[in-house]
Amino acid sequence: MNGHLEDSSRQQQRWMSWVYGGILLGLLNTFAVATYGALGVSRNYAVVDGWLSGLLGLDFASTNSYMSGIPSAIDWLFMVNVGMVIGGFLATVIKGKLNVRSVPRLWVSRFGDSKPKRFAAAFAGGFLLLFGARLAGGCTSGLVLSGIAQLALAGFVFAVAIMASGIVTARLLYRRQSS
Amino acid sequence: MTAPLAIAAQAGIVGGTDARAIIIGLLTGIAFGAILQRTGASSYHMIVNMLRLKDLTIMKLLFLGIAVGSVGMYVVNAVDTAHIGIAPVYLLGIAVGGLVFGVGWALAGYCPGTALVAMSEGKADAAITVLGGLAGAATLAVSWDYLKPVLVDPLNYGGKSLYDALGVNPLLVALVLAAALIAFVIYLDRIDSRPGRQAGKRLDPTARPEL
Image 1 (cartoon, chains in turn blue, orange):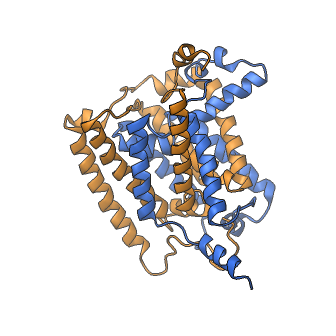
Image 2: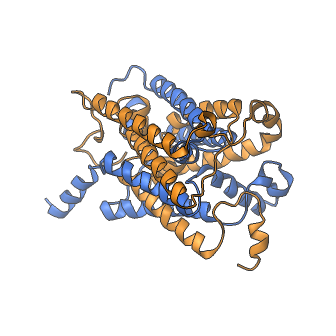
Image 3: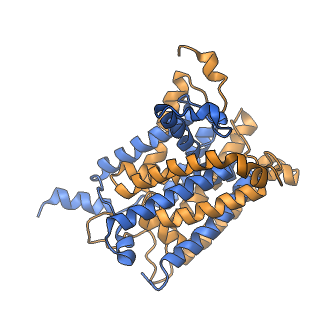
């Protein structure tokens, strides 16, 4: 009924090809190391934890041995993550509209549309992601995308471990479901 | 800017805290977030279906990004200075951390970076994943003194790379790795092109986009 709306929704259904996306990701990966350092994300969760503990008066940074290696200043790597939030937002609004939703449709098809159930899994998932990433020293960005590209042995070990356990867990969660 | 020396001396700073580092970091991140969003890498559907081996698009994207990045980095390293920092390899902590991470990856349907991007798209569950991540990183920090002697100190070989282990030129290793990854990506794409697979497509193309 509205040509403009139809066009924008049709555009939203199409992803950028993984070929172009992969080449761009590789060039960005190179640009980061050529300018300042390897792309990474998980360290910044610990940076924010340090700030939050300061707000709560716990002074995590000076009392905890792990946090003593985590900076409290805003550096290049922190700004990469700030940029990711802005870049994701801009790409979404330029190509279509914001995708405000609580429960992914694939999740609904297997576990129903209960918000508390999905939020509990999303929270537990986030908890395990960052507990694991900080124990290993990086995540899909720092140890896999840029870690393996830098030829770090740590990246290869981490990639095998996350793929093995991710594949087993996803197949268990979605067992007896074909689509 | 008031105390640059004190800030520079702080442990764990990556890439600097000067104005140029802040601006380049922001722009790098904007490009990173936009690429992840536009390729579908911040979609629960795409990540979970990759892990279910139903749609390998995200795996192809990641491996191609590694292949191009590896050759790019070591070409830069050969002609100029690249800021390469090899992560330490400690087999137990990385294996256990990776296995825990994988369970979280499948449960959340995001990784730490794609959760940030998905949150910026308006996906509430991704924002909850970020909160869970803050709690998980804090829990690791308070357990560090107990975990480090068991999982990080033993079998710790420091910042070892594949070319240290093989004793050959880094660029040569990067080129061979890139060739192997691209061959693997072509193989994955042939699997994705089999009849009946829905690679790169949304769950229901006629429905509202809400993945």
